[in-house]
Image 1 (cartoon, rainbow, N blue to C red):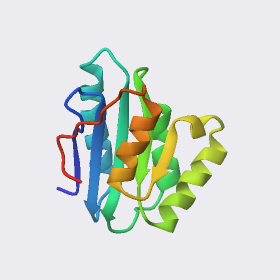
Image 2: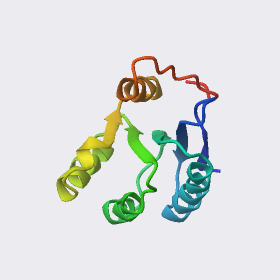
Image 3: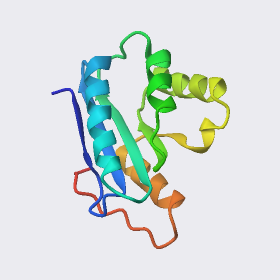
Image 4: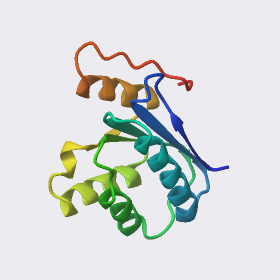
Length: 136
């Protein structure tokens, strides 16, 4: 399956979406809904990692589709870190932040999964330890 979702921390404080190979927006939407169920199951704030490191291409309509997903954030959703080494993804993140003023406070990018996890640790309290249940 090209899109998976699961808790990324033992404390259920971060969710990771892993998107690999070719994917569709329908697959992302299904995973996003499964992630919403996970977020709804806990009372505390939850961060997200969207890992596109092994993604091949980006389907058309990305800016509109991602805007719809981000507009429908749950109240306890916090930071989203998008992992990608690709210039196109970084350009889309910049465009999204321009179109949605204020989103720069909660949408971030990172060049690797390790960097994304470190960034989430930075955003959390100083004693935050990101204990992952998924490999780097």
